[in-house]
Image (cartoon, rainbow, N blue to C red; front, side, top):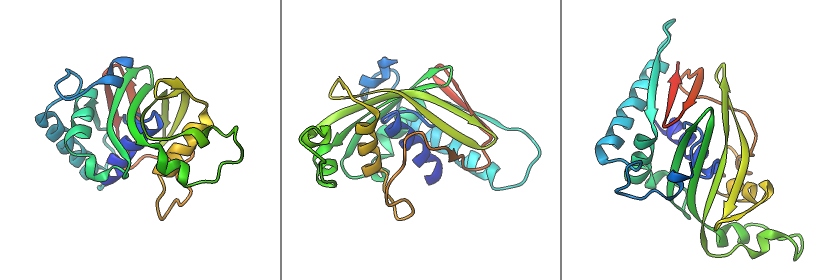
Length: 211
């Protein structure tokens, strides 16, 4: 569950938070009560689906298995269950599954922590001016094949203002650090899909996991 959840959250951060990975503008402003946010029941349905995906992936099988995960279920999970797994300083994540491989995401991040973690190279370094808590959004395309995924960033904003990829990279690197990856995740890097997932088909409003 944790591996797949992390994949969802990273996609959300990288899309920034948003979809991506399993993972429209309409979902970038969703909140509890909106149609795409979902209910506790939707969240529970996703938990059951992930458990089933993990169980199927844990045993050898020649059969092909497809599981559809909706945008509503993902956002419900992010709203009701994901908070303890989010990095400190990241809140209110949401994802949008736009179709044709395209994902979008949103989260509010603490930029003071990102800024303090590095030494700006000059006054022209945009990270020197990143302060407070602001929404970060991003949109990109997820492509998967033979158990490997790749996210191609198309655009990103900080507080509604377009930002270059390197600024988003600073944010993603800081918030995705781990003992295994002290430098965090790198945008554009390929990654292995968990639980013998072969590919993820991104359609409008849902993603189909193929094992």
